[in-house]
Length: 86
Image (tube, rainbow, N blue to C red; front, side, top):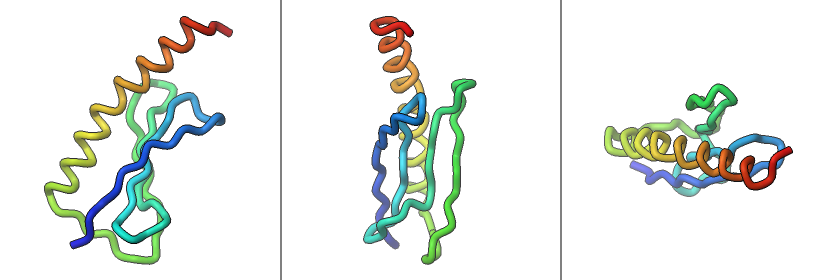
């Protein structure tokens, strides 16, 4: 079973940073987790060449990380908007 790697990505074109989930040894993510403007989690599955298999522990780690990630990035963005209002 391959390990997974979770990377936080900041993109100037997105309101919030997002997470990319990779299988060990792969350079393309199989999953992107983002916070959409309605402040909800959005999961995008990407087509990859290798089959993706997750253990329950890996799946729970991804879900827990996403649930912890969402309020953090929302707060960061709200604090930024208070400091630098447009």
